[in-house]
Image (cartoon, rainbow, N blue to C red; front, top):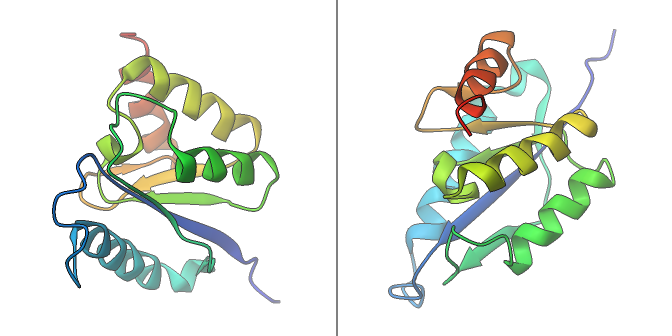
Length: 137
């Protein structure tokens, strides 16, 4: 039986533009770590989609970020099953916004994974942890 393909997208963000001109910058480092994580999950059917979602020079305190908006639209259009981030704060620095993001993910059966923190809403334990965190908002 052929394994279901799980479409993974990587979202990267850096709040300042400082260093973005470098050949290898913080966004590249975030992407590299996320790509390696997705590769480690290939046996589960995880596949990286080609589209890049990178917001260089945008604060995590706002949801008004071009690549982030595109990412959320693609989640709503069911083009993405799992959003992979380097750290949760790349997605947002606001707990209220985080709750809204997770609500959209849930509505569209999408999950998110943080590579450097043990945060993975594809598992029941990860969802429980998230629910506990969100109960404090």
